[in-house]
Length: 140
Image (tube, rainbow, N blue to C red; front, top):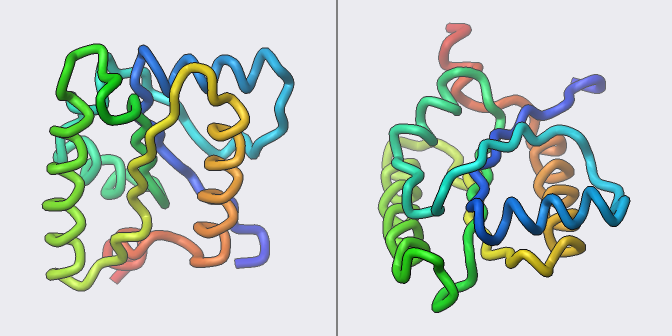
């Protein structure tokens, strides 16, 4: 556990969060390299099956980044993502799994610092929690 480094899958909205991640990188802001970013056109396009598959395939956490409410390029995609996350987290809780391993955050293209801080915080929290419960379920 001392050498545990979390694997985080990040679904990043092309118009906001991905651009914010790009800004963080070009501004040389420091944050852990634990996230594997996947560019999606909208956070509303991230189906619950994608989240579950990432966790089942070995991700210790999943991060979904989208535009701030009211600023979605596709008008209401981020509202769809928020509704989907509420349902997904309630399912995770009902089956006894840790719902704190899936984060949904609103980060605009101008918020590179917020992106870097969010990735740093998520990585630290998951590092403290240890490997995913899905990993332990498969080892049994």
